[in-house]
Length: 490
Ligand SMILES: Cc1cc2nc3c(=O)[nH]c(=O)nc-3n(C[C@H](O)[C@H](O)[C@H](O)COP(=O)(O)OP(=O)(O)OC[C@H]3O[C@@H](n4cnc5c(N)ncnc54)[C@H](O)[C@@H]3O)c2cc1C
Image 1 (spheres, rainbow, N blue to C red):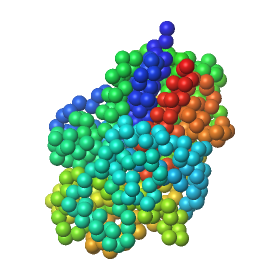
Image 2: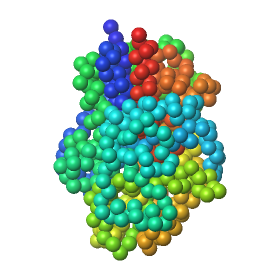
Image 3: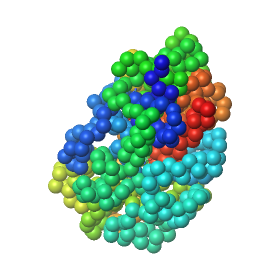
Image 4: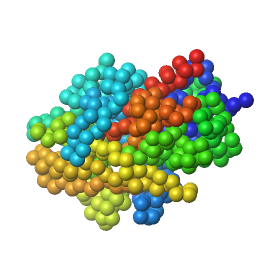
């Protein structure tokens, strides 16, 4: 007797949303998660504990290609990385599904157009109760209706910023957010980006999707269970070797995140699959993308009295920059405070406090293009991450353009710092979907080309990173896969 009809490995954005999509299907679903439920504690709203002391960071280390060990900000709790996310739930723009010429290369496009995913985006927005306004951003793709809820209101300094940006010719719009502001603030008055959700104020993979899924008695969650290896008979997965013993199901879904899913496939190499599972294309672990992203601090004599701040974005340079190819998206970061700035820059605390109190901080994000040499590999028990940034010229262009524009908008000093491999927040692409088994790992529903009963349902599937946050696209793909699995089971 197998342990379930479907085992899902990982309870993050992909795994939990898939479980929610399977609710009510009658299928017995078992979700395995290596982490535990994130319990409320004083540190959950303490910037110093989170940023300076790394209270919630896993002990895990990965290797850089030169053998240096680093501790990635890749979280292991029920809900995965989404427990810490900024709740920004963007749709990819319609143009992102076709090949795009960038400053340093061309993206391959997707095997289907935006319209294929649009109904699933809509369902994902309903599940995550997204707040937004689809009528403001000129790059917004077609929506069948409005967002489920109106946008999270700007704080006064951000309403002022919105007016300043409009004056210099930009088109700022509300960030689409999975945040119940009242509930979030009822726990403590802090930003939410980077802070873990413990009261359901942030609609994340656990609080929005998994809780919903687990109301179905056929769906169960086991925490603290790490999947170590996948067994096959050559054409089908026959079992999972886990820290809690061997588990079996007729269908297995890997949703362990783009780095761990690839590592698991590579670690499961066998005589029948010498290069790792699902890897006849040699694409597993390749095409690792992570966005080129920088924190940009705009300083002015005005004090920034915002608490949460993260409500505005603009895409004026997303599709083109005049005659130039795309540069990327700009959105606000969660409010930088003295402890956060001191921990990230080494500045003395009094100076960090002073700068933070006069700063509005932005997140500048450019597309990272798929590169087969940018990859995850395994070495014994270790994960090696060789991230080759691409399209860097576009990112430098984006940051320069933002600096110039913010100066015009009344921020005389603008500082920028790029994020590096220790922040793999937007990791994706390592088991991409596609129609051609020679160049992709999974079909367009996420089924591995090489194995009859193995699926992938996380950021690994994304064939391009676009230049917007990935979670809603992961969730939309998961809901699409849920429908496919329900049909296949009939
Ligand atoms: C600070 C921060 C802010 C972010 N902000 C945003 C945002 O505003 N908007 C947005 O769209 N995205 C954001 N992201 C990114 C977003 O969280 C990820 O893109 C998303 O969670 C990825 O979903 P996933 O299903 O691929 O993987 P994950 O959510 O990482 O889930 C993978 C799960 O699998 C588990 N797992 C791994 N290996 C195993 C194993 N061997 N056995 C069992 N379980 C395993 C992990 O513990 C984890 O729970 C942010 C990320 C971070 C870190």
